[in-house]
Length: 162
Ligand SMILES: [Zn+2]
Image 1 (cartoon, rainbow, N blue to C red):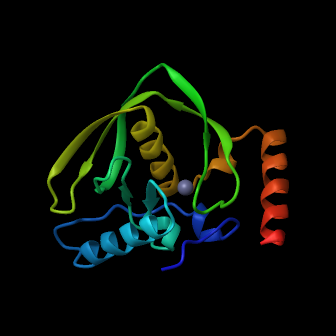
Image 2: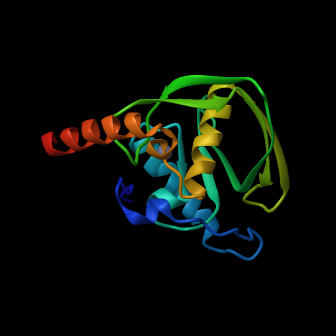
């Protein structure tokens, strides 16, 4: 399944809360998302990136697939870090994004069980990035106006080259 890329308007939509108990399409969706993530060498993917407006994310930073529905960040560290981030929906560019270094994320598993995930460093960054997608926010939206202009210029020049 094709990953939508900027400036597809679906990437700016707010995804809907889901109920894993009654949503029979959830398991196949998670499989499709994982495939799309692995096919593109990503470390995370939100359903919104496939144009499916459901609050589901998948991630894999250490050869273990994780999936969370309705993820909410309930705690974030005051300490932040700026690091280069890429996005499968903005292919070809990396931009510096400031994120909390550690977070606590609450949600439900695909079986409908409540899950609480404590995450640091890369996993914390990936979760914050993917949850942003569910709120219609991409990395370009997190940049200051001048940085954003430069990043979009670079992105457009790369898209033309491809
Ligand atoms: Zn992304």
